[in-house]
Amino acid sequence: MADSIKDNINKDGIDRRGFLQCMAWAGTGVLYSVHGGILKSVPLLQGAASGMDMEKMKGADFSFIQISDSHIGFSKEANPDVTATLQIAVDRINGSAAAPDFLLHTGDISQLSKPSEFDTAQQVLKGAKAGRIFYVPGEHDVLTDNGQQYLDRFGKDTKGEGWYSFDHKGAHFIGLVNVVNLKAGGLGSLGSDQLKWLQDDVRNLKSSTPVVVFAHIPLWTVYPDWGWGTDDSEQALGYLKRFGSVSVLNGHIHQIMQKVEGNVTFHTALSTAFPQPAPGTAPSPGPMKVPADQLRSVLGISHVNYVQGNHSLAIVDSPLA
Amino acid sequence: MKKIIWMFGFAATVVAALALAQGIMPSLAASPGDKPASSATVKIDNFSFGPATITVPAGATVTWTNNDDVPHVVTSDDGKMFKSKALDTDDRFSFTFTKPGTYNYYCSIHPKMTAKIIVQ
Image (cartoon, rainbow over all chains, first blue to last red; front, top):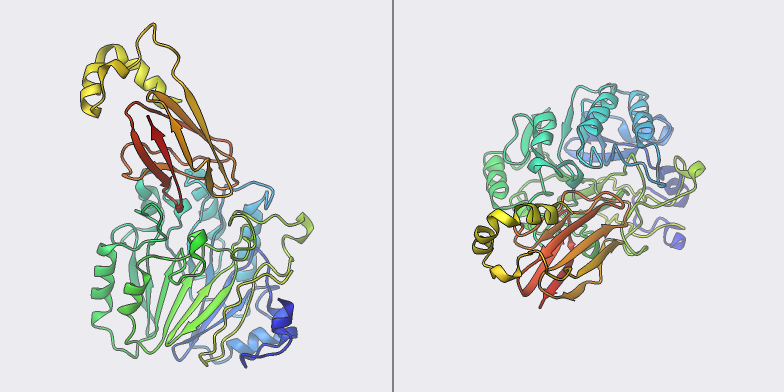
């Protein structure tokens, strides 16, 4: 598949060299900046300090960082020390040239919803120099007591199982929950209560308002065989059709993917814990094991492609290897 | 194994009520002198239950073992009949099927994982 990026066929500003420069490793966040309602993203490598990164961030109205899938408590071969890699991610955030306005954590904070795991995660994330951290739960965060512990710790003042919205400098942010009440054979699910709330939530917004939606499981169908999608996401996106700029940020799949559809841009973030295989390239989506000395620098597990304003399709769904 | 212990521990006193509540025949409940109930195992590997379908006699205890690096939750399709806690690697969950029928189940956090137990 390396051939497909020899040339910059998508005219998205990324040639093969740029692409390689942009590839990231497990243990990063993604820095987003908003330019007039259009989101741009940069994976955090050695701090977001390279010339390319800074170029992309120029003139940003504001920036925030998405961090995802910390899986605190995981200790298997794919990464025996997920706390250390989360700490590195926090260090990278703090090393950013400009402090982000806030962080979005798109779920799977913990591995098994254990209080000790949440404690550790909170302790490490507390060190991040960001105004505030907004969360949505992953399926790993709601394994006990119907997610009550998650709500108590991370979802105060939210609706239902933890959905909410807020406004920031003219943009409207919506955190959705698609990891509870999942039906046999299905994908992620938002459910009718949440959909109804969403419809009401955006009803009075001007269509020119930039909208950012974040949820754990992708709100677009990445790979249904592995459950990488959400059954009723189309209905949710239907409520957002009239908006000029909609950005959808997800985690769950532990690799970067991007796609543009009409006015909607979809992004998935890397994990800070371990990589997962590209769709269909392994028997299951389980943690991908890489040699220990490559965990923090391994290439080819996450695909980065930038969309510079234009609506060129930017999904890359196979490994480099 | 908790489920079985619970069933047996209460068998002497609440077997009739339990039988009524679950609609099972009292004769299927354990009592001294019964033959040991049969058992079956299901392994969870690579986000799938194996075998995906097993047939067991009524009264059999099925034990699931999670061999994956990620947790799974064994849950009956109705979410009520049985539901394990989150099974970490090597964790097990057992359930005794007393009444004939086809029982579909799935992993409640990876709902693409589906399988069934046929009880005869």
